[in-house]
Length: 503
Image (tube, rainbow, N blue to C red; front, side, top):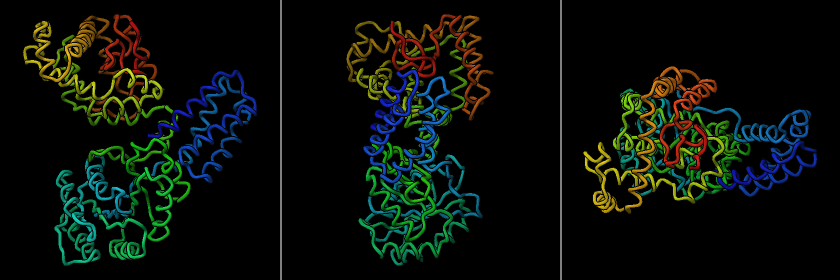
């Protein structure tokens, strides 16, 4: 997401970094490029003008002139400006009400409204531990109710039984009563859409709103439609009053103009964003974290959250014990590959690490992508149980058989075995005295502080803890950073233990 804007802004800041000090003309030149980048990203012109005027006043002030690295100060000013443009503080859903909290989903046909209702049910159940019921009020689109029922089954949420004889308002009243009687915490009402905005749709929404008195009216808008999505949001807000916006398909939006314009233009906060096709691909929208992604500062908080969701505590402790004892076989390697996939694959993971915007393209050009990770999984699954534990058994004929069974080449098998051997050697060093100290720091006390919690009982380590850990690992002869390395060149993931090292 925001790929085009991210690349252009990085080019601007790179040129600033080459200057020892910034003059007013330097700032104006840089901001001119930022302005063009925002306009090319399809951000609304009034929003761009306001943004540039705001950050220019700060960028040519005394704080820049006194700073050691003026370009870094400009990046900080642009970062703060982006946060303000995106809506300032995060705006969570209003759920602290007398149950059931009623969420009304509105939007045009084709915006992903029904799918988003299913995703929202999963999100509320997983993140907020709420008991959710879904109800379809869409009597105009064929198979709309069948689609929502199927999504409810996948999400393991409640669903209001269908009726062909009731109006949307009657269905709303029955859904409210059923949700109260059955003890649901949240009721999600999926309304009908149209291909274009018309008065009949708005009148129906107003009637449903009057019957349900919803706690949230969420407009579902397709981010790929750009400024059309902003226009749609304005129309719905003026007609029925929108409390928040859900932007779908943000993962496929290279420009991001709708996301950047929406809050400023409509006055409605973006509350959720769709970032994939799966039911769990719905995220709470945080302006600060999104600004960090746009400026290639990463989103470490989201990375920690994904790790906590993907890695089960028992499995993490089992892996930690094996690593601490220097044991590591292909089954463990397979576990790490699958954990990577659960966290969104290489693309999703690298996008959350700071400073890797440009590296992502280089990695993709080198053929290191999610398809490669899937090939690695297929290769391991084509091995026998004995071969996974005793990799030394893999002679030429066995490797040829594994390649044929996994649909890959012998060279692919050889590369995987080499990666495994590199990691196995590192794990053996974990068994040394200094290596054990490093592991203890990483898996025990060293992970106890910082932000957020993970499945191993701690949070992100502090900078001091990371420094101590790195020193211990270097003393033991281990590559800096450790952990799963899909590149097979020592070190850990880029940004956590340094970039892949050249041999």
